[in-house]
Image (cartoon, rainbow, N blue to C red; front, top):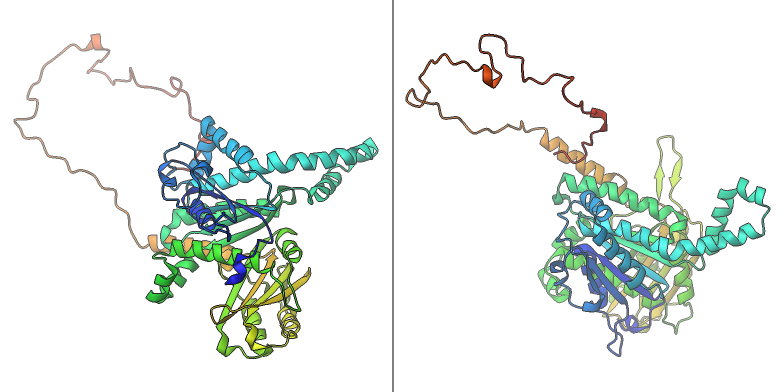
Length: 483
């Protein structure tokens, strides 16, 4: 793909957290321009030095360790450590405030949600980044509103003015993109439970307009695992990947880089320019859904063939299960998840000579049943593309992938139901009975009063009573970490 050598439409800084997140950022660090310079500024943060050694492309100067020695796939415990360990807390804060320099249009945070460093630190990192970079801008806008408003009115309608300050600051705040990966089912019920909790935290942050989060991608390792297993061996070899994790990193990197560079190309009658692309990616909040459909160029001969590719693409997603945008209720009412701006992009060979009207036809076919609230941006490139035709669809929605909406909960229930068929035993070490030679064979009439014991009476001395001990407040106990 020659267009991937174009300059990016959106300049991005890539920040990886934890084992999975740093590997994703490292994949982007591999991309170089025609001069051999990195296209994206990439950084990595992990809990210990050892986990950073596998990185191939992120410069050592951009790698930071929290010196914690690992967090054991337990994000809830990791969150407590980050709260209580002053050294780790300060390292994370310095990394976010000093190393992540928001000179670009977008800062992308990457993490795996399998538990551990990435799962916990990405939450803290979002909060630290917002507190340091975006809150001061919002506060500045609020002060401006205060100066031109009657004090009594300002106090009475404070929340209204706060919302206006957030809106006024939106053009100046640094936008954050979040890319997190869901675990495979085989990671077990405890991981699923914790991931379910942390995805809710991330989604809540993403919907908060004051946080400056432009989008979230909930990439799904289960989908990548299934797709990878279905690949032919020669395809795996050509991609130079031998496991689903490397395959997922490649898929995430390639599709984001492709749509980020295709929109700076030109030379056709219908152009999707970089300012259009910025609007799709940076305006509004929600789940970013990207899909790509390819076909052998010999099978794409007219506008109807490309239109079908677009209508197929809008129904699916490359990085996770589809988002059900319209759902029919039992009473027949259609419930929809709002779709903001929509991007439609095609790459076709110049020798096909397909009329540019295919874009108009495709656009009409795609949006007919789409709950669209924004603008449709569309365009195409003419380029020899390894003898393939490619179409991309991408949009932000307030909906979520089906596995997140109910899938994780269902998988957790399945695990619990499987466990119920077992009766768990309480193992004990069997005792060896003492022989007569081992027993103490004596009957001595000893006066044990000096030891506070009277064998002739009920011995109540030395026994604690309710008044002798401090009672435990049961209601104050935390049972979260019990097995």
